[in-house]
Image 1 (cartoon, rainbow, N blue to C red):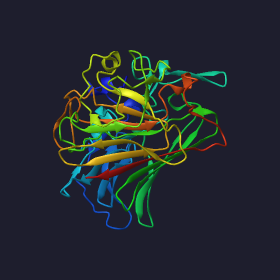
Image 2 (spheres, one colour):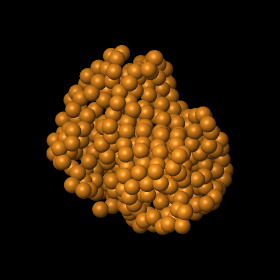
Image 3 (tube, helix red, strand yellow):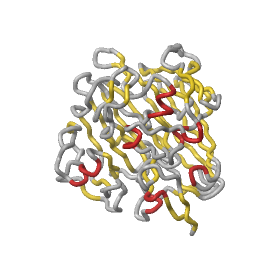
Image 4 (spheres, rainbow, N blue to C red):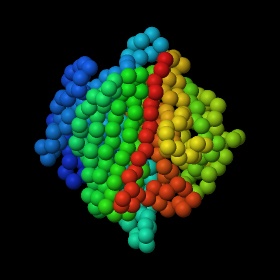
Length: 386
């Protein structure tokens, strides 16, 4: 069964291998984490009896809830210019909705974020066939990627920070990927209210890795309606054009003179209906920006998003070379969010820090190969203001 951005909005299920929610207890527990360890509550139970928990944590004015299923950020509350908090992350109130019909709301994505052409790549002379779930392509790790796995969660407090360590081991051959991949993702809320994400992975066999987070942002609030009036800047002079299947052509085209020029802040919706072939392919924006800074040892700021109405801002810094900006084009009114409002086209947007899509088949793109003895490490920091 396919599970792409398009098909999942149309109601395609994610209940592969018999994993489906039988109960949903989430959305009702509001335990306060205080100043100690993050608080855990039962969120629901999968069809195989596996319990899924939610973890509540807060620091520096930011509050968030994270699920052990998919490492999903179920909610993330930040204050507006008047100090009023609201959830700015699209999502659901029950486990069943995440299992049955989620377009990756708030999830950890792996082994490979974004698309791989024909679900196939060659590494060290061996062809690897992946699970195909987006037309003829593989998207976000296949039909049962990291977003549909239950992660082990370990809370921590460290100085003035609080957070969660999330662990998942992907066995050799899972979704067609070679090597046993041991993954650790750390969510940290800092004393300033920043949300920091640190990704780590090791393998026992050469493989490809591209981990990211798939939060849908609406700084006006989860039920705030269109994000087309949000103002966005992206520090990138080039982007990677795609074909009709949203697979990069291999070119790094200049953004100058195109709808893809966000070097100066502009409303998301200003050029979203431009008669440009790339906009037509994505039905809006669903492209990778090749960040001017490239790969860096420390996170550098690459994007700023602002909601003029509330005054809320999101600043993103990363070590990664790419940013996938997706403008929520395939939200079509068939999903009801945690605020009991229907999600329609453009009601949320994603800013996914990453390596480039289809890099295993694009020699000119930064490599995503990980080998035994190496450690995959990337960091992204989300800073909030008003």
